[in-house]
Image (cartoon, rainbow, N blue to C red; front, top):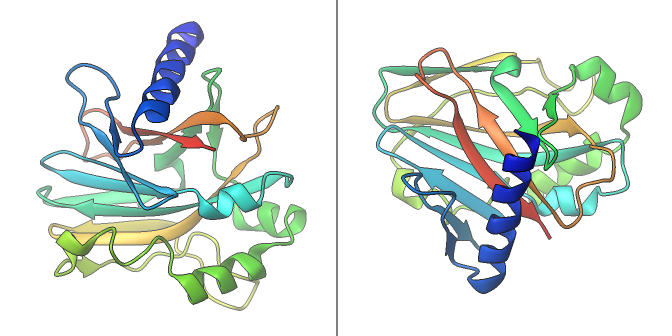
Length: 202
């Protein structure tokens, strides 16, 4: 299984090298499209999932790294996303869960800088979800800036024609993330199969 995932990842990296606009994650799988320099989107009739890697590229030497995400619920009656629903998979097939907020605060000192960056530049970029501009935003806050600076939201409920955006964190895989193709998996109770998006860290 790990060899299979690595082979798919290598193919994706080669495809990205040939075209910065789109790449195909496999036969029958929706195309992953690139937005700007650092963002990738994958969508089907029910969902759209965007991953932004700009901050991750700035945190390659840390024990944890952030990803900006947006999830749009296009056609499901509802969509529930909690900490267990989002999993990172590296090129070796190893899975990583998000840390809890106390673990991150004790072992990562860039939360304030990350939130400042998000406030100044936007999480991903307004142009990324312009087609969902009329969607209603669900409240999300998996990782508040500091204790007392905001309450933690461990479960997000996204209504139909709604979306969430947040900055999420994962442990740094052995060997780092630079030059690697990673995969973000969304496994929600409302999904028959997990929704997955591969993305490179250049």
